[in-house]
Length: 243
Image 1 (cartoon, rainbow, N blue to C red):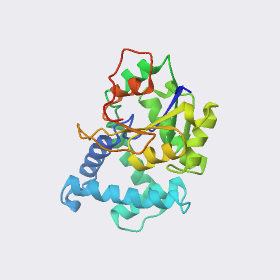
Image 2: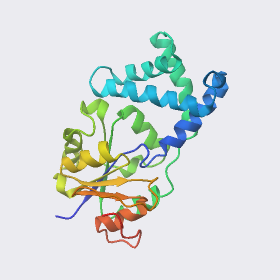
Image 3: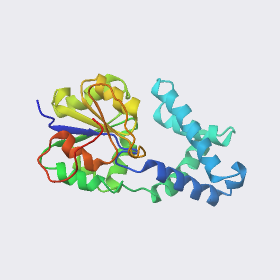
Image 4: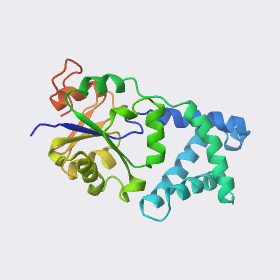
């Protein structure tokens, strides 16, 4: 059966999260007078990402609510005790700087336009509806997607098969008719393949290097390659060379 729908990851797939995170944190630390504490902006960002990964792992394991992991990220980053109200206020001030730096990758709108008539579209993210619904509205692409599913509300996160199968169920399609596009080779790539979807890893920093991937998994370095991979009837894009 042909692929009739594409389910999308958001951060670092559609949305340039890495750049927004870096520039937002740099701007915020300068505004708060905290940049000197970490020596360099790069070290501060490294510490922020370490705290994010640690607390997200606890959230994914069911040990925290989405809001709790966010507040604990702040506590871990600053390495001090804070009330919930203090941690939340700190995070909300950071969000102002972070959101100022939000942007889609330049290949996103062209591929969504190219596939609009041939494929249905949905989102599956390891975040929360509150965050991603708002983000997609600000970025101007919310209405491109039939459904937006997130781990915080689903109660299951990628790479678990249940997350991908929930996205297929929301579309009313079997997994073999659905492609999943995400930036993480394991969380997105392996997870989607093992759930029975066509797995497409967008490796934006891969250059022209070739890699060997298991059957059912594909690698592209730009979304311009996606229509040809899906066999879409469009002039947009080029045939993937990564299999």
